[in-house]
Length: 289
Ligand SMILES: [Zn+2]
Figure: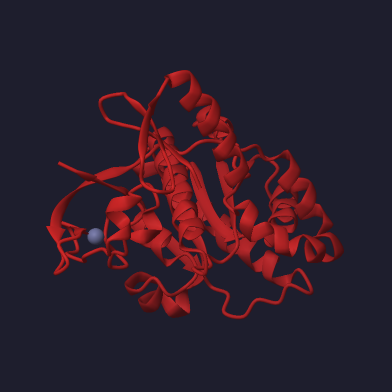
């Protein structure tokens, strides 16, 4: 695939598959880059987050599919998107007024906080560095009836009951729970504003559409109203090394892991550079000093 990139100095390049770089105009970059991004990711109306009213009690329902690592670039995009949402909301409401709730069970707190093998671990760990977190009291989730959504709703609303200073809760939860959960919360607390952001990518979604149509048609409606948006690019400076065949490879200065020869050839494809699970550079674009 042809990649488009913008350097720190503000130049625009087209990066061909063979690694050849061609300087292009900003106009061409904007046009191509926009098309590419719109194809890549759906969901998440971030402009809605920009216009949040911090004086109203708010719940952000951040929908996901338990993060699946089969397609690494998709996984990393979703993590970036979720981090971006946490940053935006915390900036808006303030660290002392925002709480994070995850569907990940309290029963497995240790595993959730110390590995990246469990659904959403990475984002729970990230949120924890900024704001208080609550993990769910549910251990088995039965989607056939809506009893688990009642329990999630109770869990979430108890955060407001127990912490009067809190004005916003970011809820990380499976996308399929959202329509029912929204209904339950509104019926119990009509004073609370609910905002839905979807972090499920198109690639993850497409194979599931027949099942969603059959079993959860309200989720389909939810997906069509969510608009695509761009994510800011994150970069970090790498150490440059050469392997035994004198080919360029990269070393991460934070976790110390070393890439193969493909990462220097296609730095924009962040899935080519593997980091330790908790490395802050994970998913960022490597750049030479
Ligand atoms: Zn690293």
